[in-house]
Length: 283
View 1 (cartoon, one colour):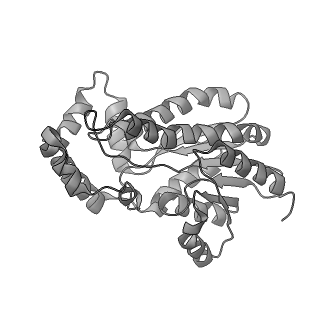
View 2 (cartoon, rainbow, N blue to C red):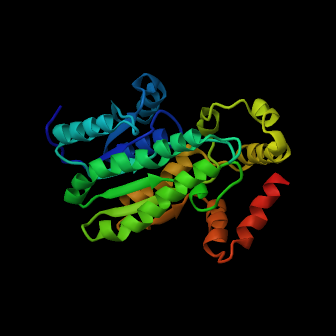
């Protein structure tokens, strides 16, 4: 492999399926040298098939965001092979369903490890190279990084943390030439929900006094995913906007629904509007 590249180089995490896969294909179609990473390269068949169907080339590599040695090796490998790193798209993440009484503190720590500290691991390792390139640091968060949602306490806490960190970092990063953005999808028709790995009927049965509220939440959420979910390709269009715009916004929602939902929170000084919406989800 060449030790240098004239094309801009982007590294994307969590590309085995869903948003990450679609973003990898879209960035390659836009002319970026795309390093598509995933924790288990044995799960790369769908990624390879999508790239072949799109007629693009991807550089598929292993990267586990919670393993600092893996992160360092991946970033060092990109620099060794291409001599540059112009953008990072933090997409890898894990869902979690639970609530305070029924979750262990260890459960919450695990969610934070993937969704927050995993983002920090890669961002920190890549940042000197992004600074040298005047590059982009993009993180796929969620509307759950703006609006807290029932039975998603741990997940939303991690996404809130990412948004707070990146919002705080953005002006500092801009002072050294790096643009920081977060992309906020709503419901997306991906394997993400299935990847939580839960037996929902068993979860409801074991929820004790929270069973009626959890049952109501699950029914509402399943309907939302069936009726209003975006495709990964639609979300990838917004990710590509953050990657290629001359002056990308800090916060980008991926749909009108996501803009309306997050807008409720961002204009809600006392919290009553948000709780008025989310309380109905568990009634």
